[in-house]
Every structure is written in C-alpha cells, then in structure tokens.
Length: 584
Image 1 (cartoon, rainbow, N blue to C red):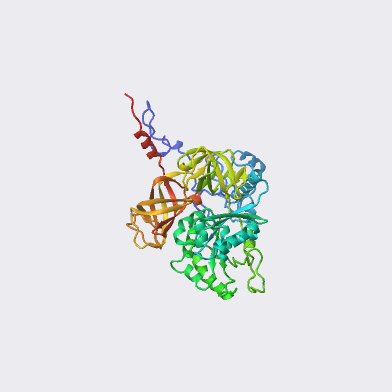
Image 2 (image 1 turned 90 degrees about the vertical axis):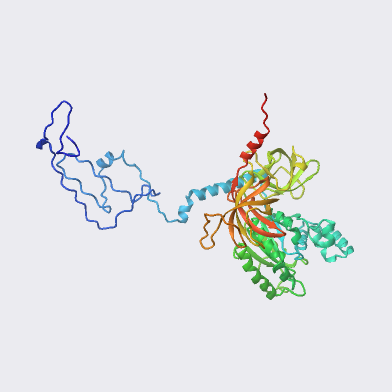
C-alpha cells in the first residue's frame, strides 16, 4: 500500500490487484494545536558567535511511542523546567555536557583583556622588546627629525644651535666656524655651517643637499635631516622627508618673511603637503626669530601666525589637537630650545621648550620583526661599496646574506656604521645607517634601490595601479601624461597609460566607466608605468614604500598611494624565451 495515499491500489508483482482493506488504515491523528502567539516570532536562523548561550532552542519533543498517544505539548521559551537526572543522563550523548557561558556582545574593558587581537598585540610588543634587548641591550629610542620650511626661515641655524647646546658639536669647532664666517663677511651664519658643509652652501647661505647630523639627549637619540628650502631643490627635500619620523616646520616670525613663505608661491604650503605624503604623522611648528626687533616676543604676532597656519595644516591631513604643536623659539640665541624662555622676556608662554617636547613625544611604531627593507638614499666608494639609508622595517646584522633589488644582486653585509661613524654589530628599524656591502660594485647601485631579505624580497614592477589626488595643474591630465614620481628615496620618470576610474565627490564611489581626463581637485585611479622595474609595495602592506608624489615643471601635481601591483614575471619569461636557441 502506498504510504502517501492510504486509499490507493497496491501493486505487488505476481499478485492480482485487490481493493485496500479498511482495517489496515491507521487511526487518524488529532490535528496539532499551535499555542497562541503571545510574542514576536524568533528571527530567521543565522550564524552567530552566541554558541551555547541563553537563546538556545528548546529540545525537540520525544518520538511517539504508540499511535494512540497524543503529541507532547510545545513548551513556551520562557518556562524551561530542570530535567530529571535520568533524562539528562539519557540525552547526554546528544548535548554538550558543559555548555559555554552566555556571551555578551557589548564591548567592555573586561572583555578586551581576553580579546585575541589585544593579546596578540601585547605578545608582539613584548617580543619586539626582547629582540631589542637581544640585539642592543638597553638602548635609547631613536627618532629621525627633518627641518622643513621656506628659504631663510632659519632651519640650518636652528639645527646648528641644537647640535651645539646638546653637545653634538664641541665649542672649539663652533669657534672655528665663527672665525671663518667673520672672515667671509657672514658673521651671523656660523651656526648653520655645522650642517651646511659645502663651499657653495656656505657662500650663498642656501642649503642644497639634505644635511645630516646626530645628537643625543638623556632619554633619546636623534638624527637631524636638514632639508633645503629653495624650490629648485625640492627633490632633495622629498628624499630627506622620506627618511623622517617627525617634521619640524620652521616659520620666520619676522615681518614680511612669514607672509612671503606662506602665500602662493612660497614653499611652506608645498613642504607641509610633501611631508604628509612622505608618511610623517607628527609635525612640530617652530615659530623662529621671535627675538627679532620687528617681533620682540610679541604674543599678537605669534597668535596671528598660529591662526593662519592651523586651518591649512588641518586641510593637509593633520589633526591640530593631536598631531601639531606650536613652539616659539629663537634659533640664533637658543632661547626656548633646551631651557624654557625666561618669564622676563616672554611672560605669556607656559609651554615646554623644544627639546622637552620632542623628548616626551609618543614614539612611532617600529616593525622590528618584519622582513628587512632599506631604501638606498646615497652610495659611495670607501674601501668597498657603502650605501646610506634608513631601515624601514626589520633588522640587519653583520654577516647577513641579503638581496639588492630590483637587480636581484646577492650581497653580504661586511660592516654597519651608525650616525657617529662607529661600527656596530647590528641595527634595527628606524636607524639611519651606512652599510658596507660585499659582492656588488658601487656603479651597479642607484639611489632608490632597496636592500631586502632574500626570503621575502620587495616587489620590483614596471606597472601598478594607484589612487591619485590631483592638487594643482594648469591643464587637464589625460592618458599618456608624463611626470616625475618620487617614492621613498627614488625619483623616476613615469607615464599614465590609462585612467581607470574617478571618485564621485558626493558619494565617494568609484565610477564604472574610465574618465577621459582628470583635473585639479579630482581623485582618480590610474595605471602608472615606468621604463625600468622599480621597488615598490602596496600602501596597505608597507605604507612607506607605497605612497608617492608626482611632480612636473617644478610643481607638485599629485599625491598618491599604490593599490595594486602588476607582476612582471610574464615579461621575464618572454625575455628568457627570446634568447633561447634550439640546437639542430
């Protein structure tokens, strides 16, 4: 008999058709009565993290023993009577013996203590400290600071005075500089000669290349990078900013000088934009020349400069409350550099001195356990090949076997020198070092190459996609546009073969159709191509190797970040096949 239809004919092979007998029909079941719904129905089943919590469904009703027994009533979710021991024992195989405690989805500090992410971060921080102690013992924290600002703001003088008062340059050397400057008719420039070392820089009073110096305070070590302020030398300034952790924007408070530097055509605006693009997250704005007769530590002048700069710095991407600090100083006399300025001279200033502030700044995050990446900023020959640069991630030891990208040259670390030209056994992320290499000639190295770990080397590509923000351009930018790209310590000519998307200003979404052109103020996604492979990474993986600046005709055209890398392996295979010769 069919189980679906009790009154249907039954077919058995070898037996004649017979009418179904009435006696075989089972007794009809009483209809199921659903309880009245007094509350909202439960939501549809979804996968949640509330396993074994208070909202577990009621246990299913036991199977019917005989057909005459009516079905068990459905229990309401509120009334959950405790099961007797016999029942709990019988249901033990099907249910977990120790249900998990109910989880609360509300975030709290108590829960944060057991949160896996926070525990992982704690373990990582402890591991990093252990690596530091293993490499160096107890060592002072190291910060790279870059001096930026308009030409003649007093950057080199301020840096030279810092070196003198912190003991980086001794009194005898300073007296020698003072005597030489007096003979050259440049009496007030002697402090800047500690950083401006070439005859060209000293005679004209203009920094041309990024000056390097080193000093220590009781709590930290510092590398000074003195960037040129003149617009002709902006490429040098970008390479200096790429190696910095903190930017010191030097502003001249002298009447007329601040206005010249800040208004259109001055370098103050461009420098702030460039250090932000280079990845410098903190900026200290030093208002210099407060002792000038036109200023004379006047609070009104200080407030005027601060009020004009704050909205601009905010528009560049810095938070005025957390990322920006204003400090009035006199770089020439040294007031408010190391010791606070006397109340008799400046009664309204209650803030810390310059060195006090940078000593107590929060330390930047260092990727000590990441793969080694060290962009080369300069190279020279001195009893072997020596490269100079800042270690962006990882650590390096004497005797390490490394790879120099993009040429994939295997090299060995013969020696490592710190800022004081002393040989050290190892160096870590954030240090500015000189490394003597074995296995490569200095002619085969260019600034922009990257010293990297052979296990996970930096990517070398000819094509990549990037998000661009167009800052300033006279004409529109179309496919085929050429410019000079500055990324970490590399400057390379690039072309834009295609514009892929633009971002809608109202919604912030990417367009489906590629735009015909890009103009000032727009954000676009473009394909960028270089003639030679360059060492870059995606911005999300390594921010320092994934952000760049586009410049053309002496102006910064756009800033951008790399979103996708196009692999070059297909081209390499094609080149390899091209040189294959088949023997007869």
